Amino acid sequence: MTRLIQRLSESPKAPPLAETAPAATAPPPAHVDSGPGEFTRMISTNTFKPQAPAPPPAPAAAAPAPAMPAFTPPAMPKPAVHMPAMPAMGAPAPAPHAPAMAVPKFEPPKPPAIPKPALPAAAAPAGKFQEMVPILLVVNTFLLLVLIVLVIFELKGK
Image (cartoon, rainbow, N blue to C red; front, side, top):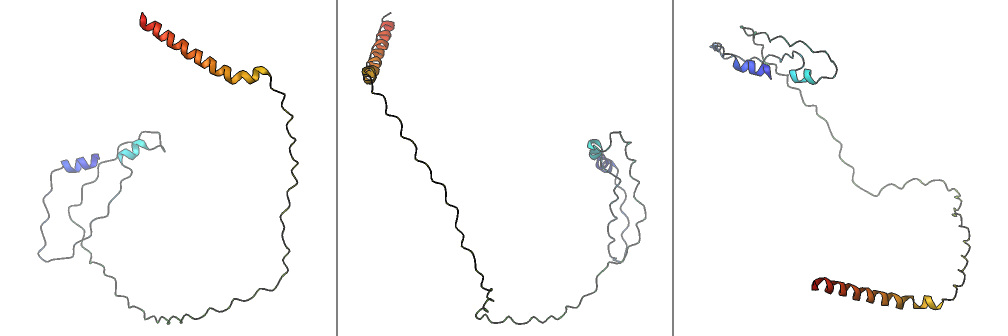
């Protein structure tokens, strides 16, 4: 990032004079990598020693290198390849038969017989109190509701 700012802050150089004869343009100079950038150096975990800042890049050469002629590959002749015609789709050839072999019959194993569970013992005869339980639940619920209504009216009366 700092190199970009330095390049932008430099004063522009005078453009080179154009040649009178049109010539093939020279390829741009190959990018010279001077090592990892500042961000990479800061977060690099490979080294724990602070590194010295990279030297500023050398100024570009004043005289451009002589232009090389553009390379054009020679024309390659296309080989003549004769593709055979596809055969007509007819009946498929019969598959060869495998020799007859006696295959043993497979029977899965039979599960063992499950014994029948024993019947539960006869329930003890219900007592008189157990017969009255459903009625007692209904009576208790009704009395609870009456009690709640009385408490609500008593609180509103105050």
